[in-house]
Length: 91
Image (tube, rainbow, N blue to C red; front, side, top):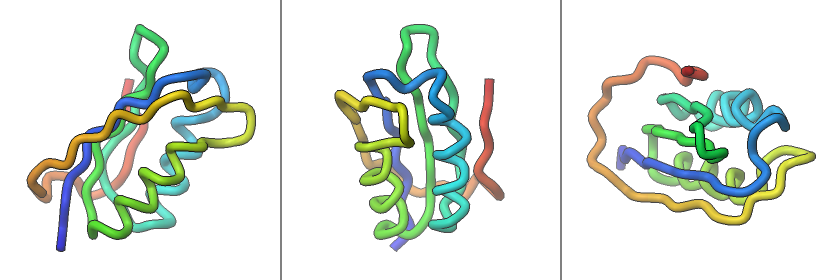
């Protein structure tokens, strides 16, 4: 089953290579989409793939990379669109 997730990650998640490591994990899990920093200090992620692989990425986001402190991951499941070919860092 293919699915889409929209995540907003709060905590100390900027300046700790969160976006870069999210992209590495997304590629590892064969998940497509994008990640970006928000002006309010959160990180936003939109991703698509097999439900279990997207869930693996979401589970990883709850901890993040070394140096990050994740206080919350607000995640919404959405309908798969197939619009992405890769996973990218956007600005």
